[in-house]
Amino acid sequence: MAILQNPKNLTDIKARGGSVFRSREVRVNLAYQPEIRVPLTRAMKFLFVAASLLVFVFTSAVAPTTSSFAQTSNPISTTASTPQEERQQLESQLKDLEAQIDLYNNQIASYQKQGKTLSNEISRLNAKVESLNTTIKAINIQIRQLDRKIQETEFQIASTQSSLDSSRAA
Image (cartoon, rainbow, N blue to C red):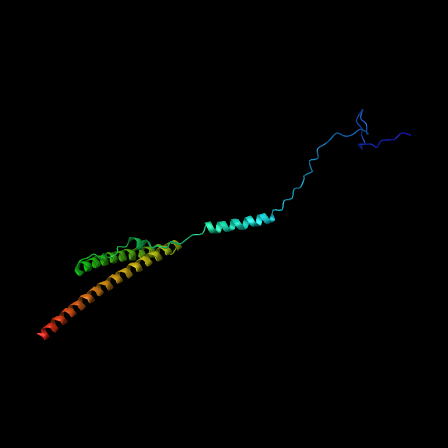
């Protein structure tokens, strides 16, 4: 008894000269895609946290710590030989500071006219701060002038008292 082969192709219509028992030609399966699984969730979480920290650290801003007016101020010269020269220096500085106060007050008035946007408000507040700083410096100069006058008056009182004591003794 002959062993019958199973047909390789099931076709209703057979090509001329073809056999249903022959093998089919090799075909490429385009639907097959191999899956590669890589656990990235932990790595992605770590990278996200690290990137967030780096952005936070390197993009933070630091406020300025020095005043622009403090860098340009002129300290009082202590090399004056007489109190009169020192008084003149203090008075000239007082006039300069009063001129700066007027300038800052004019700036404040101009900023108030411009409107109340945020940047104008900040500029106006900065001008007020500088104006108050110059006012404080002017008051300090006036206090120094009064201290000098008090010292001169005390010296005159002491010299008058010593002359009175010497005249009483004589």
